[in-house]
Amino acid sequence: MEIKLFCPATIANLSCGFDVMGLCLDGVGDEMIIRKSDLKGIRITKIEGADLPLETEKNVAGVAGLALLNELDLDFGFEIEIYKKIKAGSGIGSSSASAAGAVFGINELAGKPFTRKELVQFAMQGEVLASGSAHADNVAPALCGGFTIVRSSNSLDIIRIESPNELYATVIHPQIELKTSEMRAVLQPMVSLKSAITQWGNVGGLVAGLYTSDYDLIGRSLHDDIVEPLRGKFIPHFDQVKQAALNSGALGSGISGSGPSIFALSRGIENANKVAEAMRNIFNGTEIPYEIHVSKINAEGVKII
Ligand code: HSE
Image 1 (tube, rainbow, N blue to C red):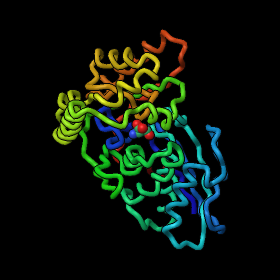
Image 2 (image 1 turned 180 degrees about the vertical axis):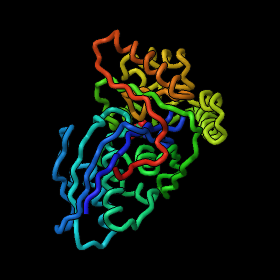
Image 3 (image 1 turned 135 degrees about the vertical axis):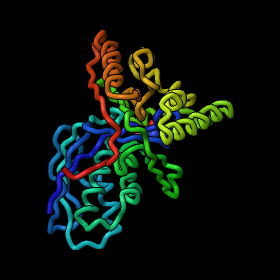
Image 4 (image 1 turned 90 degrees about the vertical axis):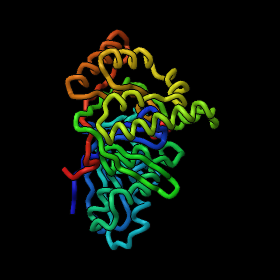
């Protein structure tokens, strides 16, 4: 009748994979309760931790859930309670955690008619509401866990790829809000052939590095020639934080999603903690409050707790 979920935060883009690559975090995420109800449709009955609309059609979880419900012939409905821990506009997939949680929970209570991958198409409708664009690089890892590639968002070809065991993410979230829609508006519609060649070389290198547990190759591939140069300037101390992460042993570092969070990947938890310390030191010298997370890659994705 009722399930409680952990809805994980995610890091999208991973430097070279704009709108295509993402990974799922552990220990950082929202909680949600989804309950069957005699009334058809979806009602959001409670939201704690954020000032978000309760109206189903204006809420990311509501819209994603309705997209799924339209495909099902059910004689009952659902109530949703959302306990937000991930702040909106943080760059670690706040809206996708809500959308992924809603479709996963409803699917479970409806008898699992869809696979996790198939649920991505419905969760994406939440991203459309939140940012005006149908990208799946946050919802895919939130639903499927691990690293994911959205090979095509038209035919929704989602590939879940293996990653080495010792890979850890460090994410620092300076407490300012950057709207994804605004951070997409600063991008250029055209890229040069030279930048494109560099970028797809890095995407190939990153995927190969993840499959073969080649940490150096992963590090060499975590570069973004196209989006980071245009967005980095909106993130306070971005260059310093990135440099501090690299100096303290991170394999690579970049903007998490559309920012302002900054991520780094490291080999082993000790290195990831050292990177956290280095990132913290930069922000400790400023007035800007921040949150920092060190996380293993979450292989499972959204789950029942
Ligand atoms: N790929 C998206 C972007 C992720 O960078 O705009 C944020 O939702």
